[in-house]
Length: 325
Image (spheres, rainbow, N blue to C red):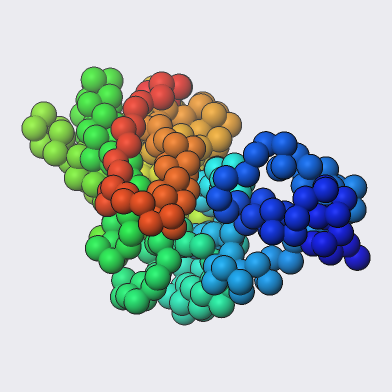
């Protein structure tokens, strides 16, 4: 098995220079980087990540904690986080908390044990006080925590306002807001705030209905949606707090012989791939998932290098018109 000395000998460089290239420390010429890369490839050399982390007291790994990996929103977020991290020279340690506080705490312990360079939290299940005393950057996405390093959110309230304005413009007379099951105050709750604010200003009746937590955990809303729609047969417009709820609302409408968009108009939120796969295709609020992921990685990288970072970054949203309105 090739060693660091073998790589240095093959590249015609000192061991110190090769080490600096591998750890990205100090000024390194492009010529030296290429020589090291060519030598590593020729010798099939792989750096010992554990040894490197012990030496530097941190690794080039970022811990990412999400509540679900099957959920379309989190699947897209994870993919974009991994791409952005790779470009910065980081790897991802993915932790699926499955919406349990105990599992989230266990994963944070694992991340600490692996000397991660930082944490990105996309989950409501991580206790607020668990970051106290941590000496690594903690970046939250769609969750604002005072003791986190920084947060990245989209303009949720504006998204709710856009949804209400679009449905009212489409001549809807009674609206349903299909909200969140989370009891923890989250930026996403502002979607309903903005939606109801416009409805009230325009004098259009609006009813908020929140699903059970089990529906969120299983991502199955059909039974709940069928009950809601049967109770509010006179509703003619829906704003769903996520595309996965909106997609299942389309299915339930079909089952109940409610035609979309003729009898029921539907707006989702997120604009994940699922939105363009429904029939009819879903009109939705575009959340800039790719940009949010890139900013989160950049914030973590800057904070890890002890640079000042903005406490909160808010990104704009916009309406994507398809076929359900």
